[in-house]
Image (cartoon, rainbow, N blue to C red; front, side, top):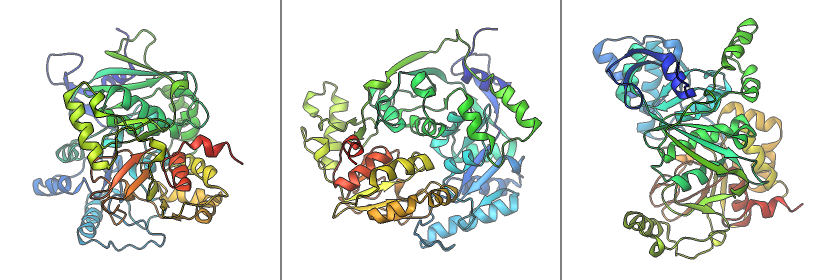
Length: 476
């Protein structure tokens, strides 16, 4: 048998039937999907389609449902949704889960949280699985040695009815991160550096595998950050070979196998890796020690630079399309070429999202704010990625650190990541954000978003402007 990449192995193992005579990229297959995670925002039409066709869900136990997009995250949680549209979505979601036999973690459930935080922490996603869900950041699960990708509403309906999807094989791209990250540089900086290097469409049509010593040295949660945000350079599927760190992360999760089943699972999961001589369609290399803390200056995740850099000059960009995009981005962001990024003031600071709201993220941010206070004129908030993360953080006293520093300590949910709830920026407000997208209006109409790591958000909140977290980390 020819040498295969991990992506090829996962797709081959889940192929029910070939749909054409081709092999390799572009070949069509009927793909078995192990599991899905549903939310109240992308699932309604799928369930309506099932109802109209009088179809049942084929394997209800293979789906986990969470309310995360439209719910408020105020410190005191109630079941009621303040927005009528959101209330209807949540109510219909509950009705669908009840009628089709799907487990639901609703707003008041003790395990409620953002789907891509809840599924891994519960052990619902395991190495070797293929997971498809109605959210583009399903790529997160690549950190566990699973292949995850986002699908549309009609595909959700097809999956629920058949446990399969019609799928086109991707080309393969390996990103090798050599060496180790310098102090103050995080997984978020790695993926932002990658997106800046290859562009927002640089991985379009590819399934990406991350490898190298720089990846192996990261925590599993750090790997989740990288896999989550890789979709912002166009990746439709991300994998990292599972290792001992993944096994340790999953071992005590509630839904992982136990006893002899665990031992058998680990033996099988340990084989999940690309063959040594497997060929990738494309290779990209990153030097870990060359990466610095990153921030975005524009309205696309690839419009980024090291925090000690400057706002770029569109006149220096030779490509007319990119130059046009830069001009538009700077106008929206109200920035001038040549401005030092570290001199840009902020009014809001947001730590949260499926990219960066896990316990390790909150610990890193708390280390920066401990004994300090949010700058005057800055409204700062922390939204844990799940109710479980929130409880664990409170058990460590992280909530008290944030509150003493002047941050709001809120309940879990997508919150200000996408302004689909009551956590939004006002027009013209500038936000340091640990989220994944800085599109125009993403966090609120007219809001201006600068993406960065949670520790960088914490540093910006304390300084009142974008700043290099390393300057605060060095101080007592």
